[in-house]
Image 1: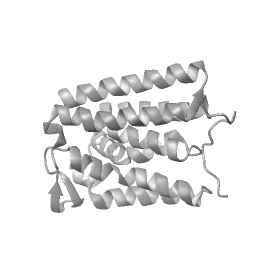
Image 2: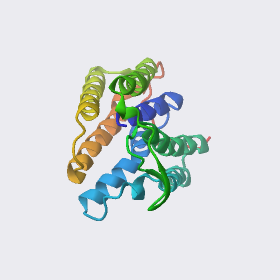
Image 3: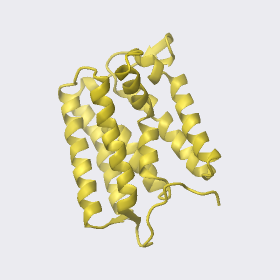
Image 4: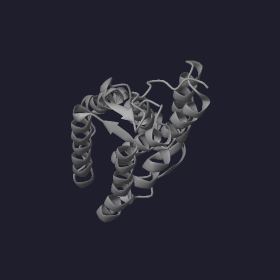
Length: 210
């Protein structure tokens, strides 16, 4: 999935507006960021290293734990961990080939094949993306730059997602890593360009403990 993972990040921002959208995108895309970095470095291309369920638990614990130990609230830590962990069931639902394993290099692997159906993918993943955009827009206020920036980024993500589900590109670690990092940067920029609805306050980049 692509739009589905970004939908989780936008939904997390709606659930807890004090969390950084950039942090949520990093969490929701953690497995893909690790995969792309490993592939770009020529270390490994086996997706089970970054995408097994055990690996997702590690990414969730690392991100949520780092946030909490850095002074963030426990609620925010759990949301970030849940965003990271959500990657595994979403990819398991979408992947055609059974390559979503429980542990790296071992055990059964799963793939329910949503991508076999273009209509099903558009309805389910596209529906998640549209709903997440609606949630985000309804709960935030943006200036002109923030509004233009949000819709430009959302449009580019939608275009990339449509291309991906119609003609999946070959694995390219460097290209994928650059693509992901551009949208991580976009998400962090949106934190600066967005305020909570009616509050007049910019979103916090960390969620302090009460």
